[in-house]
Image (cartoon, rainbow, N blue to C red; front, side, top):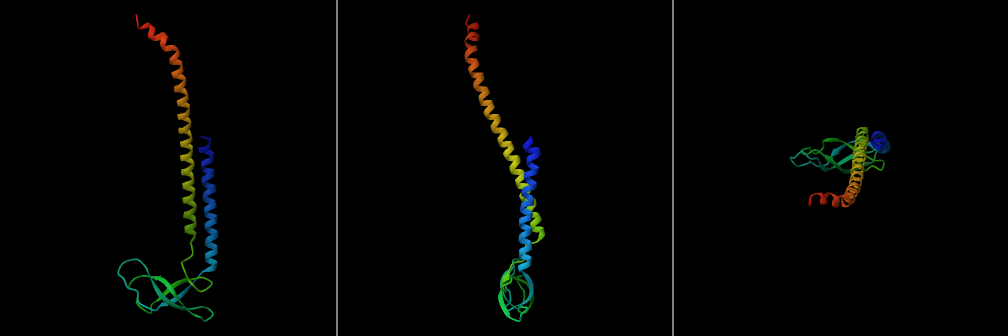
Amino acid sequence: MIVLVVGLPTAAISAGLAAYEASMRTVRVQAAERHQVTAWLTSAVRGGDWAKRPAQVRWTDADGTTRTGAAMVKPGTAKGTSVRVWVDRRGNVATAPTTTLNATASGWLIGGLTAFGVATGSYAARDGMCRVLDRRRYAQWDAEWDLVEPSWSARFRR
């Protein structure tokens, strides 16, 4: 019970905070390395389903360099349409940076999984201990019965 009452919350909060802080470091690094630019599609994006598809885009960097790359765009978008694209420091198309919501969700998920693991481990340890003690108790009862049984069975032979 001490493990469950003290250890479970401590382990869950520690693991959750560690995961959150690690994710927040990633959020800060990605936010510093990436920025959005307006790019224009160089070809139409075909397809009728809902999934975004890679398409060639062109944009101009802050220093005036024209760049091209492949970005994920909604199907049915016409050539020449402007789209917002995330770009890294080297000028390559990148995914959107991780958000604080992702970091928060990561912390809660890891904390919850840790709590579940501690609870499951505690239950397994308790169950294993009960099995060991029961096996020992049954062996003692069997040994005692081996001593007492001959005197009991003699009563019924008359």
